[in-house]
Length: 367
Image (cartoon, rainbow, N blue to C red):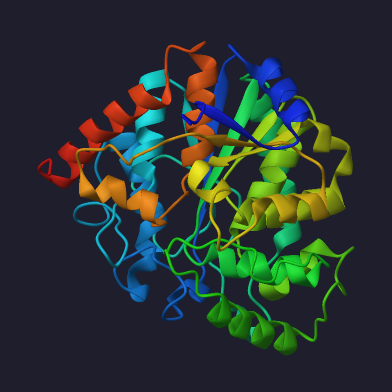
């Protein structure tokens, strides 16, 4: 059966209510980018052809949004198999809908050649050190200020992220805060390396002296010990904006760690939140975003029903095999584009725009 343009993934009545609240109104898209040395552990991330160049992936992703090409690298960010970044989806959704966008630097080793908002974060260290993020409380508070200001400019916010290695750091923070996330976080690779992630996370928790659930009420220590710099920046931005307007948390299972942080620090804003992801995350048999959300807070989960199975490009059809799946706010920006347009933008028209941009950016020929 044909999938709808937007799928209700968790709590259908709340999904429908959230879509009614924001349908036809004007959003702002903000992408929080950061880097962590955790991504350089071989085998953990597909966000870059080699682990050592993952520092360039987040800046390259947002350069695509601004310029339609990358400036800090040649070409576009790709997986080890050569599949392009989900930023191609985001840029297509933004171009079709005209949604304005901002970039927030949560902590980078390589700065993008675009305008960005800096909240004072630093790049993340390898979580196996047990001391991975500096001053998460300060970053959270500064990001909250940014979120409040952006909420005055739009009817709602869409907040995405780009940080290679982020599902591993999400796993570690979720476990530290008492969420049974083992084998439930997703991966940008078809074969989710759960065993490797668990080994890395167990080593990180041991180095920090953390046991399952011991930091349930201390999210800043969880982040500073075994998290990544995207988390406090995104959590503050989302929580600050959600004091006044709805917010789509645009991402996959990484956003569950951000949701857990918000649930601990600012539970009063949860009614203004929804997770917006892609069908590939929702249908991923190697992860379980529904189960994670059910353990944290009953927020609706929406998914863009994008289907690349009929694409003229093999690099896009690979998404149907479990490559990439989500990132750079791909699902949430697609949902916002469709809702903002009142139905004029559909998953079919999005695919056509994605194919146009894919062809221009990769110089690939249709199969």
